[in-house]
Image (cartoon, rainbow, N blue to C red; front, side, top):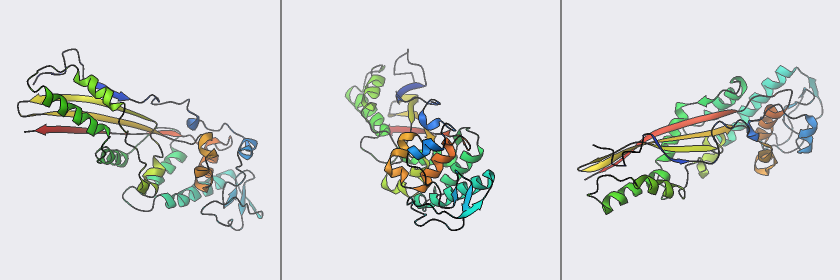
Length: 282
């Protein structure tokens, strides 16, 4: 079982990597504690919570109308509270509001873990076997233009067209070119809006695909591929200006807790990966 890709190829070999970088601390959604009240008001964020006024540390006697879906209506009467009490209320409200995006399936509690990490993790990266499993499932979901299908098809076509050739140094280049037009796996199916994956990983910032091994046998072939991905659990100004986000209190609370100078909870990187084996035998 020789290295039929060519003697100069070292494993692992990168097949694809996004332009966006891993561990990009300079991204706007990774900033925290950089805004004052006036900055929020200029973005139209006077109404953050249905339970408290976090600007003045007042707990409302009654929650605001339409509190679940976040209409911009602020109750006026309330009781003065401490900042720590305000933080407790905001995080509890954030978890409660998350239920509208995560109410079925095996990953519905994932967002609660991420919210806890947002509060207590001090900006450290988040890892989860649940996330790895969900990524594995998404990688293997049938999609005509998915990376794993593109890779397998490139290998199959190359071997079937030149079955007797030993070294195949051009195969890697073919795979790299085809992957440029593939559709990267993300958690953006309709059901992800409600199963906890869309709210937990609302976009994948960076991805990398590497070939760990490739073997040609007399009766077939096998390859091992490593898929690595990273998301940012943080919100940027562009996010909160988007009405899809700003109309929900969940995101307004998140943005406030992250960006207000007196709260400044740190965003973090969410890392997940999966190793996949593809093969074909006679």
